[in-house]
Image (cartoon, rainbow, N blue to C red; front, side):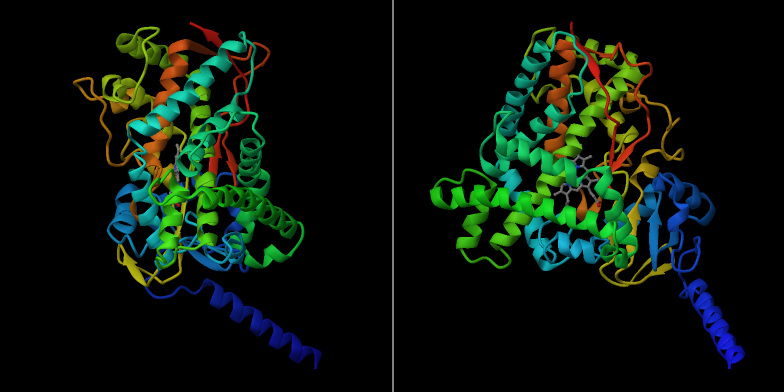
Length: 488
Ligand code: HEM
């Protein structure tokens, strides 16, 4: 009896192993890993680099088993274009899990939700409303310059003391979204602003990001401590954020005036009152919450990467200041029309975004069965767009490991942007806040560099590490570090 049971067990195990290693016909090549876990334990701390290295062996479309699912990894620009641009709707899903279902209250919001008619309607509405409030044109420019002048005032008051200004930068970028969404800015010590920034920082932290990633690869882990506790914590913070936004929406409902659309919330309420399909209060709260999660920390951490670069490559800071002085002198006021007049600033910003992309990988999924480069990809397959690998690809960039803003300056001295610089990704899920982010980066950077020289902390024994901190499982942030702002 025991012998028969052992034989049966062995047959079942062998069958399981055969099934595990078997691939559907026409599936892309890639490492299979070990049963149950796939390659999850072989990714290392920096999965983007591991994927790039595996891609050299397996090819442009790689199929990597992670947990119980096959993931498609795209490491190069032409293949990414063929997928997310040429088959836009097919590659506009989002890699998801039961935890994401909870986080989005059942697929509500914008950034973390799957491709549905509700997402399509709201993505369109967001883009047109941002345009309506002239994000990217003059009105947001004025608001950004208000934050920039607060920044210089603060930096002036530091009297050359070394400090980490990450929190202040985060408050500035959060205030810009408060302008667009709530119609107002807050003082930096205002409890609403401080709570918003605290909540966003916790939700995109490295500490909570790892469990989220684990729950994405192994959905059952969501219910097993300690991951379950971290997931509950994230959901708790999400609820706090929704409650805070709800208070602002209630204020707007009370003071709503059909003839005076003050901001994004008013525009949304108008659609709701008109009974437009998919427009609900729940969607409004989740969408605003997503905008704060996607559009504040990303811009402020890119500014922190700029400071990081100043310490590691000080000659670029000198060159930047010279370019600014040539056009504005030491006291001239910057505005957005100077973007074309000071090409080196744009080149510097793009090189920072190339060298340190805030979102190193985009997580998509397929919305229907499809083919890519002759390989078949079934509906619902998670897809990773390895933006980091594209931005460091030696086939497209001369000396990609060198930080060199001049790669974006043409022979006539003008800024030029090659199509393969894609820190905001491509296709249907491409960042809708790109223009706003680039305006903020330009105006804050020029204001800062025109008035202050950024120097290393004299008490630090070495420069901050170049290792990225992967927050929220998504965001490639710099480590914390202090700098000195010396008036020039
Ligand atoms: C330097 C700053 C920023 C960077 C590097 C950045 C980058 C990105 C990238 C790469 C994506 C695509 C993710 C994917 O494919 O999975 C994305 C999506 C998104 N970004 Fe940004 N972003 C920045 C600033 C902003 C700002 C200021 C806003 C606010 C208006 C914003 C709002 C969003 C939203 C809502 C999405 C999700 C879009 C969707 O799924 O339809 N981002 N961002």
